[in-house]
Structures are given as structure tokens and as C-alpha cells.
Length: 429
Image (cartoon, rainbow, N blue to C red; front, side, top):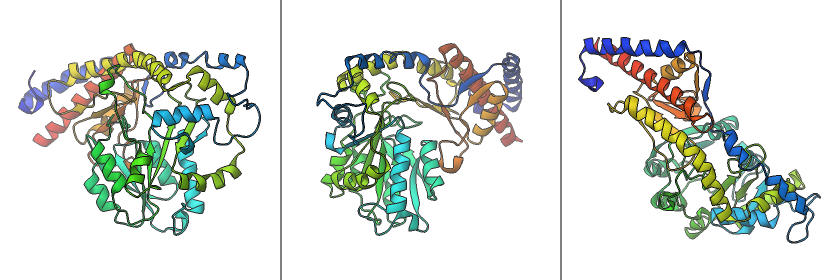
């Protein structure tokens, strides 16, 4: 098939008419399909259905601590050791929470807002014109946290190996820039794994703000889609890396089991160096006596070490892979004839990032909605929901069944072609 740029105006009009007919046929089916968020599918959740059976063996830890009672605020040793092994750090750097790592991130920034950081000249709430760096495309809920807390969101372009560090290093010369969001392994939504160079530059760069922080959200650190370990994303221990460059306080790292076991009943953690940890504990020990240690014990018995976690994640991958393959198969079939569009082929994580013909993403999402396909709003992966090129659409193939994914992506593809043809006809007018 000819590429659209090679077609005459008459050929484009004829193509648009044929595509519109296909689109109307799909609308007549009255579909209700949802690819809005990266939720685990029921089959994935079923993998952990036996997790609480492990509590039949009692509620005591290996140190004979009763998890049903108060105390052990940082979390039981066993769960901290597993998180430490996964993140490549020391158990003493780990503090656990309940199911939401996003809650941990929000609370960490709130402590900084009210009390400042251990190296802050003053609480962040007192910093007028405070700013936060947002690699984009990125995670919309990250952006919402800092926007809600009054930071100006500064977009940073994403490259194939992480944020554009030339841009980052220039922006951090502003003392009002207090931090940066990072999803370093299988980033949301592009599936980027940060390179060694990017990690090193983040760790060693000079910042005007003495209390600048990297929020290192390692949400997908074990969420591989392939069993070939040579393709798995690998990252340095960012805590040690920052310390090696004399910036030991620079990073907070976050992770959780939310997409490993039960999304609504997992365990989260943050990792920090000694100074940051002691500073945080001053307020955490006032905020709560402990978190859900019974759940921690169940998780430890169900997944006793890092290797058990990785084996469990291969079961997730076996469920997820056909869904990603279906998504890519339809995109290649429908759109592979032209380079007007492109999309990511991640080796892990939960998303496919689709790039439409510039200026058409918003209309594509609207047309898909009319045809019964719910997608994440165009621009959601950018600060303030504004994609300058109106091009990016985040696709979340994890929750629907393969048959629904194929229908949804086919409708998306038809809409992408219609809007591109219409745009090109406008340009020819």
C-alpha cells in the first residue's frame, strides 16, 4: 500500500471514505472497551490467591515477633531484606508502608513541605516559585502530586535512555528547582530503561538547591515481559551512586508489590540513606505506630526471596505477553505501511506508548470514545495534561482480554488513519 504522503488528493479522499465506513461499522457494534489504566487482570491477581494461607503457620516472625501487635514501625526484617535485595541496597535503608507507593511519595514531599529536608534552608512550603522537573512523557499521577502541592511543573524531554540530561543539568541551576520525578526501569509510558550515563549524571550533577531530591520510583523493577534475562533492565544502586559523588542525601527510592501480588493489598517501601532515613523517622514515628505487619509476613512466606519474586513475575509475564503481542500485531498490520505513526515495544512494564500524526491525538481519543473504546486522555503523560505536539496516547493492554485488545487497537488504528488523512487534506487545501 502507498504511504499517505505519496497519495494524490483524490486517493486520500477515497481512503478517508473507506476508513469512515469501517469506523461506522465498529460504532454499530456498541462496544464497551477500556484501556485507560495499567491494572493487573483478574488472572494475574489469581496468581496470589493462596498468599494468606501461609498465615495458618502462625503470626510470628523468625525473631519471634508477633505481627498482630503494635511495633516494628519500619517493617519486619524479612520483608525489608527482600525489598533491599530487589533494589540492590541494604535492609537498614528500607522503611515499609501499606499498599501504595504513591502514598509514600506524597507523604515524603509533604514532610518536606512542612518541615523541610535534613539539608533544607527552610520548609519547601515557604519557597515561593518552587519548581519540579517532570520528564515527559511520564506518569500523570506523579505530576498531579507536585501540581497539587503548588510546584510549577517543568517538562523535560525523554530520550531513548532517560531524561535529556543536558536540559536537566541546565534547569537545576535554579535554586527553586527542588526535585525530579524518575521512573528508571520501564518508564511509564515509553518503557525506557535509564542508561548508566544518565544515572551517573543525575547522581553527580551540581544543583543550586542544596536540598534537591530525586524521586526514584522503581515501580517496574521486576516487571519483565521476557524470560531472557539479558533483556531485563538493569540499574545501579542509586543510593550508593549518589553517595559516591558526594550527594548522599540526593535520592529517595520507592517500590511496591502492588502489581506483584494484590494491587489493593500490597506492601510499599521507600529507601533512603542514613541521614534522610533518620530525618523521616522523626515524623513517621509520630504519624503511625506501625503498618500492616500481618500482610508483610504473608508476603514473605509466599515469596521468601528475590528469586521467588522473579519466578512469580514470569507467571505474570506469561499472561501479559500475548496482550502486548496482540497490540503490536494490530498496530503493525494497520499502520505499518507508513511512518506517520510510531509506537514503543517495551521489554517490561505495563504500557505501550503510541505516537500519532502530530495534532491528531485528542481527536483520536474522542473518536475512540464514540466507538466504545476508553483510552487515557491525550496529553495525560505530560505536565498539566498538555502534549505540545498533541501526539502521544498511552495504551494500557494489561487488563482487557486479548480479543478486546485487538478490537480496541484496531479502532484506534482506524481513527489514527482517518485523522491523519483529514489533517493532510487540510494541509493540501
